[in-house]
Image: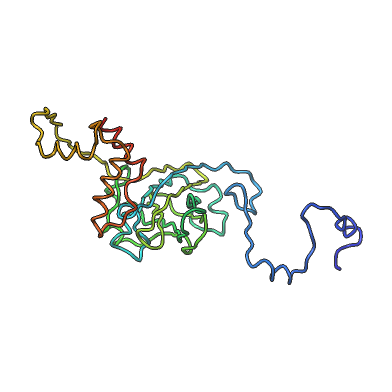
Length: 281
């Protein structure tokens, strides 16, 4: 009723475009949650166009390997994937924002993949304390348990919540920081995408230890050196063609793994067995 008649006349045009009027009280009752989405990380009140630097990383949480849970589980939190952010340049308008100390603004967005077909787990991001002095400038270093026990978080997202994506805006002094994406509980598997938006140029990289192995030389045995009992067993399993096929290998492995009741597994898939056969062929 407070709208001017001329403006009311323009707004009351009946069009099937999805717009409608309703009272604010009804709006609060019908819509308990309101999300405002903007296409870029820019603040809604910003009047100046700003091109943000963006980096994207794919990662996984795997049971017993990289699914360490949140900080409530200090024994396993450190095994979560780790990403390093190098903040070097401060914001242009750092001194204009209420006289705060100069800082570097960046935004982290953590999205869970395949969420519709998998269980929903609470996700969180934690920007840990600065990288230890001995590791500054070094890459490929996965920080261990002792570091997280001795250092508190410099910043983190507000709470663990069952959403497809959680995002948080941070502002920290220049330096190197470790970002640790995690589920709330350990051993919850899933795939994720981590996006890093920064106002200024910022270096980012995934932190991981160098993986290497010294493999012994493979010894090729002649048929005369192979044990007769093994030959008989192989013939029994392989059949007349004397070759282990994908399905035969799958049957053998799943029968063996089925005897180990302490292992939680769905067994070897056809694709896994096909890869093994191709590897040894």
